[in-house]
Length: 415
Ligand SMILES: Cc1ncc(COP(=O)(O)O)c(C=O)c1O
Image (cartoon, rainbow, N blue to C red; front, side, top):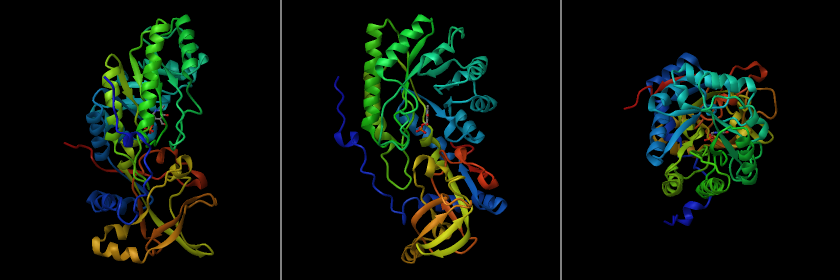
């Protein structure tokens, strides 16, 4: 069977900007008008992360429906919150951990070790020993020294070799730090075979926030080609393929729907990977839309380059994703979001382009320039949607500011 995929799906998207006057507002308005959000804000004040578990559950169900042959391991690193782990555990999701701390958190939630894989390619020997002691058996490696750490591990231990695929258009190209070429993978396989250590298959990550189904498809076919070649030439038998994460979400640009990615991956998996246990490690797509950040204006200054609003969270805090990942969350005034359609249109007329500064003393702590916002006063609230992934987990306490608290406001159960 030859797989034919429409060329427009295989091309990276044209990065259509989101209209800040309309997109994202509705979901913010719905969230902020709930009793739970209002109560949390009046109790906690700002800055505050509002976590709704319903989008997490819905996204997991959507992933399952789109790629029914894939077993999903949530990449805990994206948002390591107990409520997220509990909700996904409840939905039947498995977990991808990178440290002993993440492992303990998942096990504390009552998740069986059989649903956990350890995908950090470089681990302290003591972390490997701890994961093995807790029953984890699937690990990722990408060099001989790491393989050697598994000498004497229980016989049911299974290693996946991490491959590197360049993805310059991803927001985080993950191929620079980890992963090997096909040739190097073949040498690592030989190295493991000589030591009696089982290589069960391969793993890769195409890069995070990658809006390019063609890249996902090429990485998959290249890996399957390599696996078939090595099975013929190196007397190997593989049973596992880990296709990583990377599915994009909309920040200030539209991205393709998950189903476009599934549409290119599913036919390849159906045709060529029926004999394999196919797993994926999505992080961002499962949690990004689940959390919104509410901040307030702390100070206002009119400078040579225009109006500045200084708010109570910044790039050393929850907006750490701006610096670490070069993603750009939208920011709205809460009052305008809560107005009905007519006043929103009027507010659009009175907007001005402003700079948003974070709360620390550092000049690098600028959240956005040229943001269209209505006139605001000290104490007015702002909201950013899609703040669930790689935000709180990468926030610092620079200047003594605590990491912004997270309050769960819904989705504990979803029929
Ligand atoms: C090994 C590994 N797996 C999974 C993920 C999650 O990727 P994403 O959030 O892009 O889905 C990452 C992200 O950095 C990763 O490094």
